Every structure is written in C-alpha cells, then in structure tokens.
Length: 100
Image (cartoon, rainbow, N blue to C red; front, side, top):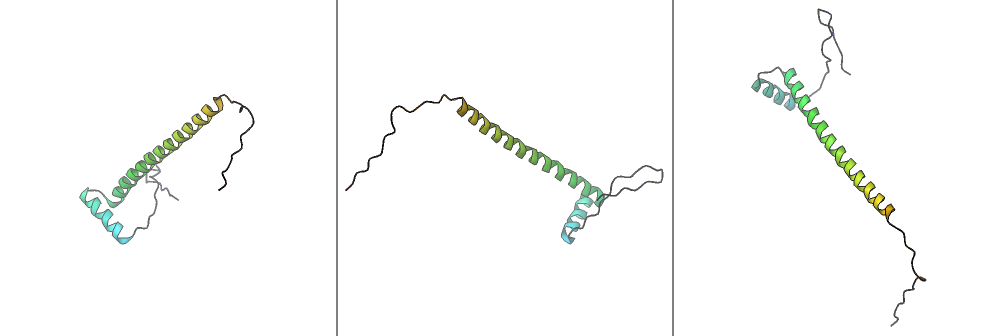
C-alpha cells in the first residue's frame, strides 16, 4: 500500500511505494535514467505511467471488441425472432434405406 508523508510546510507529499527489482532490471533502469538525465525514481515513474496508459488502452479496445461481438450476437438473435414461423405441410416423411 502506498504511504504518504508530510513535507516541512505541512502539505502532503506524493504517495510512495516500495518495489523489489531483479539486479539486471535495476541496472537497465539506472542506465535509462542516466541516458535521459533523470533520477532512477523519476525514470521508473515515467515508465510506469507509459505502461499503465498502454495497458488501459489495450484493455479498452478488448472491451470494445467484446461489446461488438455481444451486439452482433444480439442482432442475430433479434433477426431470428422476427422471422415468421411456418408449419410443415403434411406428415413428416420417413427416410427409406435401401437394403442390399
């Protein structure tokens, strides 16, 4: 759970979280931060923001696709229900099998 601290002037600071990273991922994050002239913390924040945005947009598109499928199915059911039903004429015919 994120924790908040108060600054010296009494305002609340941004929520803080603690993350455990594998050594190689931590080194890659530090290298990216150095390339971008950012702190490691700020680089992690930027990458997390991008990841969350990308996840939400893919999640929304999946949700839209599912809704479209539901609507298509419902349209098909509605079209079937609107069709006029007809009675079969005469008695059902029996199948005749030829015996050899």
